[in-house]
Each structure stands twice: as C-alpha cells, then as structure tokens.
Image (cartoon, rainbow, N blue to C red; front, top):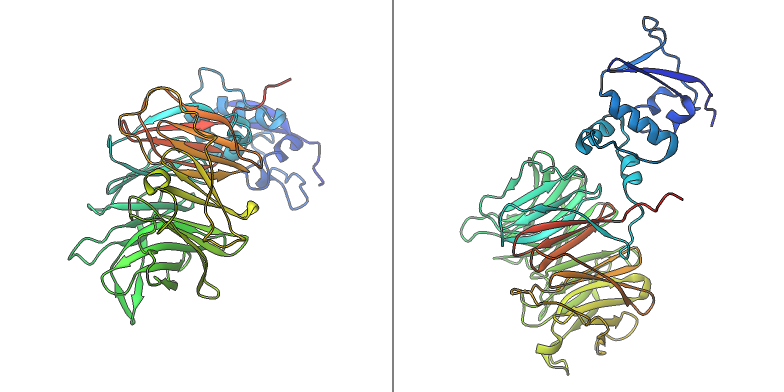
Length: 446
C-alpha cells in the first residue's frame, strides 16, 4: 500500500480543515475519499489551482469534522447539538455509513443486547411479521400493508397490496424486498412480487406455470439462498401445491417440488435454506394444520431426504404441540419449541421416527402472563439460539443450550415475531404494534 504522507486541505462549506492521505485511506476504496487515490493508493493531485489546492465540498462542516475524527481515531463522538439523522445523511454522502455503524455498536451478542429505541406501528393489533434488513433496517407486515424502515429508522413509502393479505416478506438486498400474498377468490391474483424497498415500485412478479399456463396461487413462507434462488410454499386451485423455486435475478421459475401424498408443503409457514447440505427445511405447524410436518427437500435429486410428523406421536398433543422449528446445521439437528417454550431437539443423523428430546430448562418465566400470549418463535444467530415467549426473548448458549439471558421491556404486549439482521434484533409486539430495536453497545474505552 503506497499511501503518501501528504497533507490534504479541504474547504467544507466555507470552513478549512486539514488531514493526511493516511487518514483518508481509512475510509476505504468504496468511499468518496477512496476515489481520490489511484490503484496503488497514491493520492491523485488536485487539478483545481484556483483555490490554493483546497478541495471544496459544499456540505455540512460540523458533520465533516465528526467523520474526519472517526477516520482518525475509529471512535464516534456526536455532540449533543448535532442531530444523528443529519450525521447519517452526511455519512451516506461520503460513503462512510458502514464506518458509523461499526463505531456505533459492537459485534452482535445476544447476552449484551440493550434496548436502543422503539417505534410505534401504524396498525395496532394487526402485526403479521417483521424482517430485519441486511443494512440494519427492517420491514413490518400488517394485513395488506408493508412498512419499510431504513437503517436510520425513517419510514419509506408504505407498500399497499390492494387488500391482499401479506403472508411473508423477505429481503433480497438493501434495495429490494419480496412479498408473498394470498390469492383472492375469483380474482386470479396472489403470488409473489419483487418491490423497491425505497419507492414501493413493483419491479416484477414471480409466476407459477403448470402445463405451460400461468396459474394464480397463494405464496406462503419465503426463504433465500446465497446463489440467488427464492423458495416459497405455494398452493393454488389446479396442481400448484408444493414449494416453488425462482431465480431472483431474472424472476423466472426454475423448479417446483410437488406435494407428496399425505404431506402439507403448500401450507408451510416456515422455510429455511441450509447452505451446508443444500437442502430446504419445510415446516407446517399449528395452527395452520392440526398436525406438524417437518421435512428436508433436496432439489438436486427431487426427493424428500428427511421427514417427521407428530401424527400418532406418543405424547399428548396438547402438551407438546410444536409451534416453530429451525435447522441447526453445525449440530446436525433441528430445534423445535412448544407453547411452554420447551426446546426440543431432533437428530438429523438418525431416523425421524425417533421421539424429540425435550428440554424444560427454559421454563423460567416470571411476572404477569400477557392477556393474549403469542406463539413462540425461534432464531439462530452467531452460535446463539433465541426464542420468543409472550413478552420476552430468551437467549441460549453453549453445547447444551443453557439459558443465559432474557430480553424484556415493560409494555407493548406479547411478541408475535422477531428478526435479527444488520447487527440488530427487532421485536414486534402484537397488542400495541410496537417495534423494539435491540443493539449491542460498543465496549468501553479503557
């Protein structure tokens, strides 16, 4: 890296500031400052001789000074008279938003999460799902509406799906989201669409074709793979029951796994792509169906390679009804949870007919039970297991998944859904439709 120790002078909004090329190089190649260097990281000479070699930038000088100090020290200090949103806007202009994010909070750790702020939703009591975005934003589905928030938690124009119920939503990237909706009887609509997360513009629809004809269908749960595939549970009025696969770049359908006799893939409310085994976890659970069905689909061989159902299970269904499931590839197991927040584990290396190994160590609930409790949900992130139960989220760690902490606040009602992404945890409360944002604070400066 051939960075020269040259002094660089900026005139920002009328205020002159100096720094070095070494400090500017800390901004990285993708920043505005990175464009001032050649391929060998040598500072490109300024050709503007009218300003005594000053580089003029017509932006806010106070924010520029804060960002320049961040590049020098790696620490972020925002004076109380500088609005954070103003600083975020300026950081976005210079291409330094990732630097600000990294300085604002530390690496995600469920045991160190702190409540950062809460958002009041738009439709109390109608929350469907919340999904964290890759850049620290989120989207919230309410009936036929999807509300999108960026990293600064400013709301973009909401997406109105014309009275079609939103079943699931997922992020393709920070600029695009996929929404799956229900088919309306006699309307020939439903399905999935790719939308701009910034404007709400519909960019294209994902069709299901059967016998060379485009069919209407209901899109359920969604999942995404690293090679740009989109998976969705599907059900329609012809033969479109199963799991469809689309190319998220072209929008074309590339595969379809039709529902085997006696199973319930089209009604699945949980899909999870497993990168290590190239299989798709498909789970259908109560209350969508009276019985739970969990399977692994291998699209390469077009077969179901693992399956389990609680049909005829020896335990009492009312006591051990599975509410959510998640694949844990590092442990070769699937974790499930029931309405009591008991965790259960199934070994993927053995027959699915074996019973679930239940663990009741998570039953440590304290305080008043919410009036309308929600079904538990599961998430796995950074080697930590998360489970929502009523108005709090439990964090489990270690090979035996020991309960290590709980996330809870004093109002908002039960948590109907939560999601982790962009180094944030978002929790959607059902009663007041409040969204909580949890972040890991930066380590103290020694």
